[in-house]
Image (tube, rainbow, N blue to C red; front, side, top):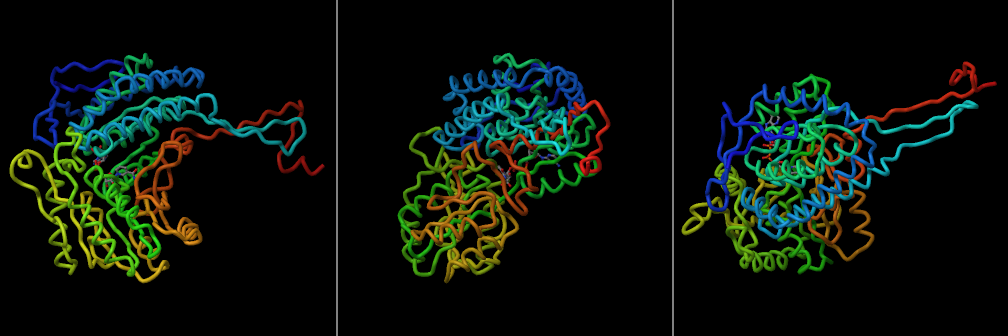
Length: 493
Ligand code: NAD
């Protein structure tokens, strides 16, 4: 199968295009070939998107929303097929694949509802016979750059608010996971979305991503990916005066206090640390545990880690799938030596799995380090794999300090039975998302999603907040007095 760019409502022709393979991380099998686009392809798609946007902005928002209802309906109808494609190209287990598709469906219906809200403000004027209000205006052509770990959900967090707000878009999916984008293109086409509203350009970050950021026809760049790439996107975007929304890396922690329900905490840690093989931006990679709970927690974690099944996510009995590629496998493994050299104790895992079907895919053993101190690199840097570090603390205050002592600020969690501590924690944890008595993952689409410090630059995906990225505020004053009225001057009279 050859995956071609989707521009102006059509899949482009193959002639002269270059391709790269799409590989199933569980089996090593070639799934498809994807177009490797150039800056010229970006330019062509921007021209199309720009022309389409003028008309699209004039379609009433509730009518724009009708397309989202249809897109959501088609996604729902095809949920199992989409989840299967997702699991094959990305590797997360099928149950999580279904969950991710569901997130996209939820986002479609939720954002469709915005077509009849998209509230602005009406406010009294300081002058007589004058009316004042603010409205959300579309921005134009927007650029969406997405990572491989959530091939569809993140794209829906960005493209659906962009659509309902009256923008047209160019979406560059990650090279590793273009098949979900291809499936979405077919859905956009079948839903009858007008040509040129949704455009998908496949290719590398350095070539296609850069061309999008530099293109004068694109007004907004909404990026999700690593902090290193996000910094480059912001630098280049800044030079071109783009509005840049960044959702980046994380080093998320679960805090377990001495009064916590330890079985519940273990379940929360396992789900958030080893789900998606630790490759969620919100994955738990640090466990900050009170010294009085440490021995018990460690033992229960080890007991349950023992039972985790690792393999191809298409098998319903598997709990931990592969990691995305060989490079990721090597990066994760490099942190084992780093941890040992720093003096941490490896008590489980720490190896690339080999033998039998493991040899065909990219499998890493769920790993636990103990005796980790907060300044160690394994406790500071995003490993993005199934590796957790246990850090012992002596008090609630120390736990909060350790949680906040990293450059990232995406998600955090605390297990405690003390309601006062729970409320203090939600106030003091410096992250964009806080969970009480649940792990670090599990965001719902109607609340803002994003992080503080090195994780973000103040914008949010998802929720109504997503509209802020894709709209400009326009303040409108209507003076019906029939005479010159000067604000701040004539109101003295
Ligand atoms: P990445 O930064 O390597 O790539 C992300 C996207 O940016 C890809 O589409 C890539 O092709 C593109 N890109 C690469 N270089 C570029 C450049 N110079 N200019 C423009 N675009 C460029 O990230 P990844 O490995 O695909 O994803 C994993 C990372 O994403 C992790 O750090 C994870 O924490 C983060 N993430 C964050 C969130 C969030 O909402 N905060 C969600 C998911 C993933």
